[in-house]
Image (cartoon, rainbow, N blue to C red; front, top):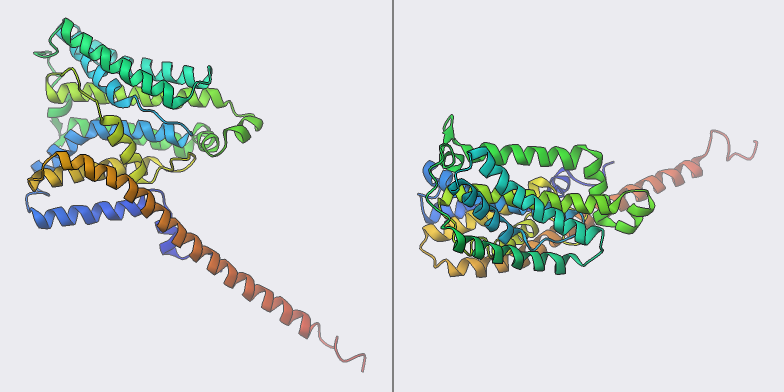
Length: 352
């Protein structure tokens, strides 16, 4: 007898409850404004949301490993700035992309080294690098106006298409597939979840916790760098304060999707769903002429809602599983008692 119903097992998949909420949100916004699911509208808002979704994935990897990264927003902004700066100076497209991604990776490695090897609190470190990245972008924008790039192929990273599908979709899709394979199919992924659940126990088991922590922050930084490159491509110009506040949206997306803040729980799908939900929410509010300032309020409330909703769903699933387990145990105990009472043939006739 199974200990849980198919529905309970389905709902226990990380991110699945919020997937249903996402579908409901799409249906509601479509009813409010029939333009919402128009092909061009969907393509535009998903293209605009891809940088945030990539940042959300990076934050999710860090949280799964038991950490937190507050610097991703401004690091993405600085990466956009360094990409634009390199291209304005005449660097080829590949070099500009490498500079932007390298900027994010460098910040990720610095964060990871300070946290994993010098044992400085991750909140303090990433809060500091958040401000460092923001300050460097301001300085960079004063040195050189970050706009006017005419390098062939740069705008096509987000505005081009292949077989009718935006180019950025292929980039994001490849990244999510790699992340899914890494977390679900490799020993690195399994160890990462173990470290998130208990770093001390993982260390005793022989897992190199500092190496994994460094990896998570490096991955987060690299994804912020990729997001920055795509932001620069889409916007065509980088302002001095680009990326400020993105970390809040990314953390919100991860939590809403079902990433466990305590670490050791969640999935790539959960991060994707959380990011898509916030992108959908933002687009839906915009199409219905809701003041953008309310998006921050709704995002903050969504964090609380996401945590409470996920917790309640898991509680219901756990109760159902315990109930079915109790019934199974009761049935098995009754069968064993009946077997003992009846016994083998002739065992209770006292030898007559």
